[in-house]
Image 1 (cartoon, helix red, strand yellow):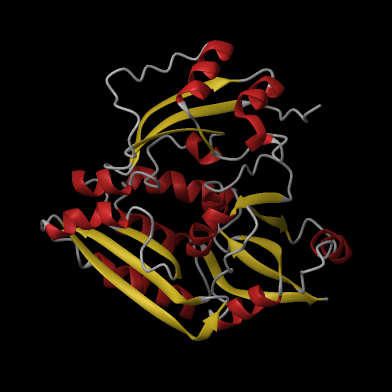
Image 2 (cartoon, rainbow, N blue to C red):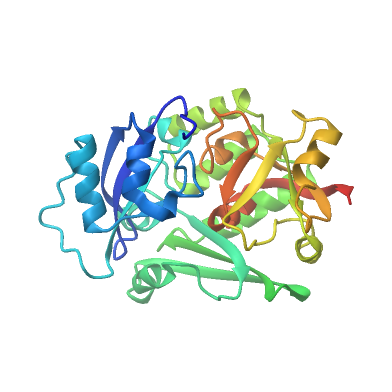
Length: 330
């Protein structure tokens, strides 16, 4: 029998690869996780609480609608090609924000002028983030401005050559890119991130004063601006990768999830037991992430440890405050 979380809320979503954002969503409650797991099939075998992101076929969508009474009207949408993708996932706790968070809606918000700056960062190769070509179409027409910053490692690590960060702004807002770089440098030189840097960052991204006020309030009550101290395990290649990255980012992993834990909520021996269970782990590293950014990646309402999708590690890295530290070695 599957463990039943306190609240079984799910989101059905249609993602438009042309606009590079969700265009239709429906929220529903599931009383019987096993019934939903049967519809999802073998993909759900290793996910007892159904917390992964599932891409659905038409038959899956029909079965979910029939079994759980979900009215998900996709009439007028042309499926069968590569542009529209239907998926199922649990909502992030950040969805409780009283306004639209930009994550996942960067392109339409940039084109609409509501978002003034977007930033994507990941290790390379590949030399392009997923969906970059959709943004670049608008660069070619003169609507958006693009700037790429490449930071090579001294030596290749696990096949990766370095970090690549891509910035986009509407034309006329290019000044925000050097301002964002200066903000990050200033925070590093002045003892770390705080509510003032956070507000300035929000302003550069294009959030309103009221929206920034909400973020600041969450920051002061949900982890502080130094961030939540977290730990994870790394293997020898991962440790080498962190060192090559100047202790500024976590490495990509081959597993579907990265296990993280609150470093202050567990004694040292508990962390060793948790993370050194894997025979490949050679070290435990500590890093700080702002609580409200971590809310985008996992459900903080659940008691940790937490699992972060391996695909979300680049987003996690964007929000690490300060340097990563090695706190234990095998």
